[in-house]
Image 1 (cartoon, helix red, strand yellow):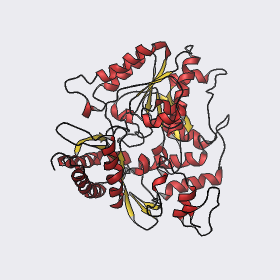
Image 2 (tube, rainbow, N blue to C red):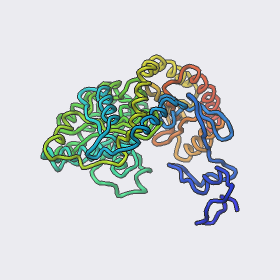
Image 3 (tube, rainbow, N blue to C red):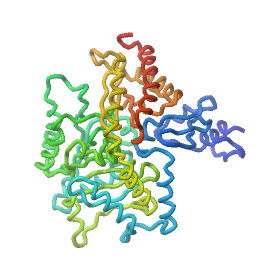
Length: 467
């Protein structure tokens, strides 16, 4: 009996292939499992080197998404793995509950040295969602300790993605991700994002910042604990803030005694050419959430980084931040993160990104001549191309057309041609590119060699204005 026809409750068949085992037993994340069959294989990536990965058939792919925005140094970095091995020989594990170990101390110190301003206190987690969840709990308990127990509400932006745990999901502004799990924890509300491509001409962009003040006033300043925003918003396609936006957000948060959480799960560790995205944009958060690139994806880790002001009440008397996890600050993972940061420094990774950013952007800008390309936006090694039906009117595709464009053609075709990137319609349809930070002109040329003909054909298929 093949694995695809096994009855519910049946056990694995001896000699089954990886494909059969995967279809029968593996439950992949954010994946339409019903789309895979003997005719439609599950992509199985078995090894990687540098900016490339290889599937079970030996086919090579350019990892144009840095394995979900986190493979900063690329694949095959045995030095990072070896750092974990050496640590395991010394101490494989000990918890961070009332005890600690050298690697957690060293990594917290290193992060505090790199973080902007007085963000000096580091609380380790295991993922981006956990970092956001922890930050939301920290904001609530901070205000409670400070004698303002009613400050519990959260303000986030529309279409923003902040994670999948229940608290993080309440911050997430993507309707389709929220509705299957409602009711969510109460208190979260959303304001417009900064998609300047679709912002009405003639209107002051600073109205987008003022919308946060108006929302705080509407909710009641004595009830709002935090505002959470990404430096460059991922969902919706690398949405940049207008000039002065975060300066005003900082002023608003100070005025209403609201904590500013900078969600940098993607935008930290070099993705924008600096260690932290808030540093590149130029604002000072009260809390930073991070994960992904902190280990260049060689082990799972996240962190919440708090200012001295936020941390100080928890450092007095019997006060305790009543939150934690078994694996937070795991010594093996911390050793890998330290080796990752050593490589960043020794190999001048941030300088490489800043030196090559204009070349990456120039390649993507060259695609703007295609009728289907409406906008190219982003910074560092984090860019999106928004696709349109009509460049003159900026008319977008409807849901059915987006399904046909992105999942029916683009994603499959780019993968078949050896490029891994993201075709996304959380908002208007975009193609996102976020290569490893070691990528250079060779990889940019390879990306263009796939993107240009595929987007040209996509325009023809969708009868885009100009064809």
